[in-house]
Image (cartoon, rainbow, N blue to C red; front, side):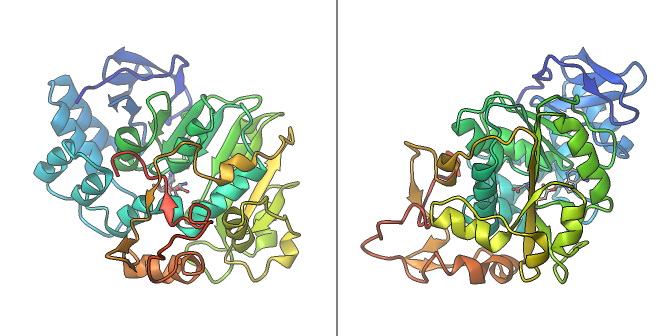
Length: 373
Ligand SMILES: C[S@@+](CC[C@H](N)C(=O)[O-])C[C@H]1O[C@@H](n2cnc3c(N)ncnc32)[C@H](O)[C@@H]1O
């Protein structure tokens, strides 16, 4: 493993006060007062984690990169309810040959299952339809709360080359770096509740999917996203939980009011659009009372839709959906089954069909998994 310099040439704003950070060693950034570790090209700029930051820095300064990795990989969301695995196990994760081996070693449990199956869950399919209807179209992409980088991977395959992902959990970004996204994608660990480690743009495409209902201040995040998007950019936010769903849910019209001028889509319509290989039909947020989650999209440039984003990348190495074992569909865990099972069951039959139907790719019987899945 190597501690590489930050890949971006642009100065990175500090999460403390927005002051510019510069590389002071190959494995750290500094604003002259506070230093931040950088591991595998991923700056750890999470505010409020001084102990983690200092322990990781001390290990890196000593040349103990694997110890630094174990410190950063142990850090998780505040709401995560499992203790981190022992440091020895986390050091061993660094040698994992495949995504699912790494996910298991990191002890990510049901969150790990979410990322292993993100490409073919109903909500991930909804993200694709929203992105196809409102694509970046060559603009810089800032994917907030990017998780393990599935959207960034698909956009890279589609030819987008200015791609940045931000997430508060280092291990998710590390999974992205190792197994999911190509090397030119910039990844930064930071908390959206603090100044963002990304310069403001004029035409940035800001994505913030499946996260706003987790956050205490989604209005502030959307307002800051709009500032970062600039006058020719876009803000897209999929899977904002409707009333009755977990987290901090709101009715669709309340979400829509946080991004004035946005088009709204119900999640079920978005998922269906991807499965049917067509663009989604937007709706009035007031008519989406029955949806599980609403998606918002506001594009100042009004980029033309790119339906190719509904499908796996052309020429992808398609493999049988790993939700099937010995010809039988199995949900990865009970939480996944309860949240996605009823909707996934509409496109993934209980038994592996033989012969495969003509729409096996659209229905995600065959899928484009990250190379070392
Ligand atoms: C359900 S996952 C969605 C991941 C990704 N957007 C996707 O659609 O595949 C939610 C993500 O939000 C991240 N997250 C939660 N709170 C955050 C915060 N305050 N700042 C940055 N990321 C956060 C989590 O670490 C997690 O990766």
